[in-house]
Length: 128
Image 1: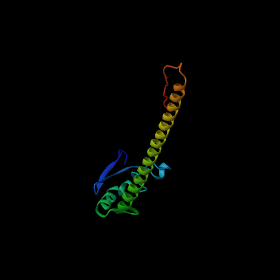
Image 2: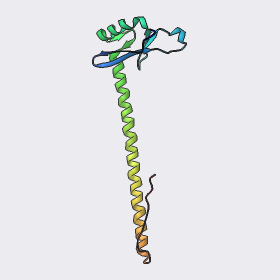
Image 3: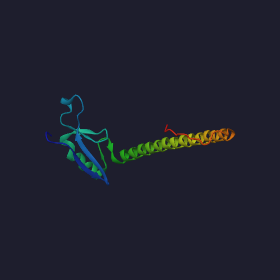
Image 4: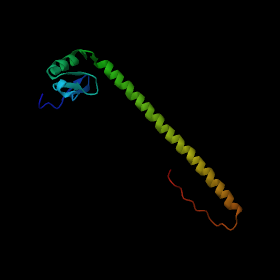
């Protein structure tokens, strides 16, 4: 366990990795390993048996690979949906601001047409 950094393996085309635990108190978890991004923590000595069990049966103790993948995909879909909603909101806000700018420019042009002494209009658009 002293020179152990990680151990990767495949289950149904998905990559999983065991890494040192680093849970506290460290003296209680000195020889433990975690399956990345999951709640599975096991002793280092059980790691090879766990990998074999996960690859053959898709489960080890209370960790079930298919449930983990389904939950991970659901969370990713939710995150993507929130991301899409966020960017759609920004796009709508930009469109609204562009319309406001068009209205302001038209108002200024209309005002300037009424004033004969003004030859041309110069305006500067600032990024907000």
